[in-house]
Length: 372
Image 1 (cartoon, one colour):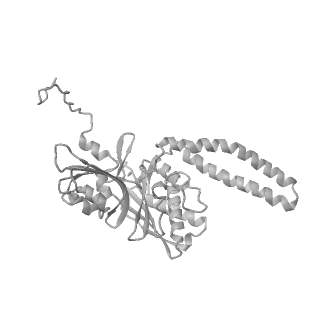
Image 2 (cartoon, helix red, strand yellow):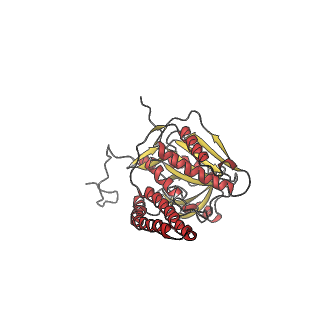
Image 3 (cartoon, one colour):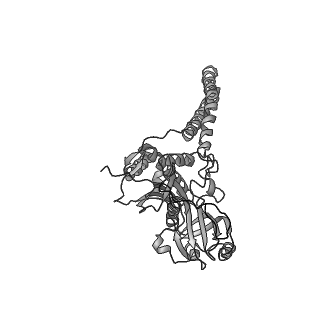
């Protein structure tokens, strides 16, 4: 039993466990940014998520002022952040990193015994993990249960509508057809709800992300609509390695995101532009926690549009079911996107670049391992 310096009896120190992650490994695995700053507000250390959020490596961040990396901040928040003895919790704070603006929950915690030193955390609100207030997988089961309960009476209503169509006078048949058409529309909505509630995960394999992107665009062109009125630019990294994903699910995700970007780009009435960009984020700059382990996500696919952007009141909720800014939107498309991406061990997030006038939806996916 160990004796403390104050001559009292204290707990025995925890012995290091060879199989237990050390503090550095635990910080590296966190999905939110952690920054250690000194008494002058200069960055002393960061984790991988902070490198990704701040858009540069730890070597370049260390020694610089945190407020210069994420500022200008709200004046009240910045004033509190400069008081090294005070703890700080600031929710839904806009920060600027380079040319992009994003919103975060920010905390600053003083370190006892180390005057002036603080640990700052930055949790991105637009991140798909943070945007889910329903407790993860529990939320996904509700649409499936609701869909099952609705489909049976729908079938009966449709059958009655078809029977009425055969017996009604010709002038009234259109009313019966309206019943069956509306039932079919609701049935399609239910099918999408069942997709959202499904817990089945398709197999993942190595696939070329550029082929998936071009296949998604080709599918949208074949479906017609207004795609031809919007310019779609491809900014691909030709050296990008294969991604580990389910090809069908990835195409569905891309169709949904490019379709939303097209609709947003058309809204202002000017020349609509959608940019699909791919790049490799080196190292472990972006990772997710899946099944208790960190999964590196170096493949980034960004879909950008020059529309007006998402309504401020909806920005934190776009991945939730039944949330939509479209007048006739059902609010299931982005919920399905999030589910499919998470099934592939990836992440989806969004941000608004106010200076460039662009809304960006970003997919981060794992790289397929070499067969060798």
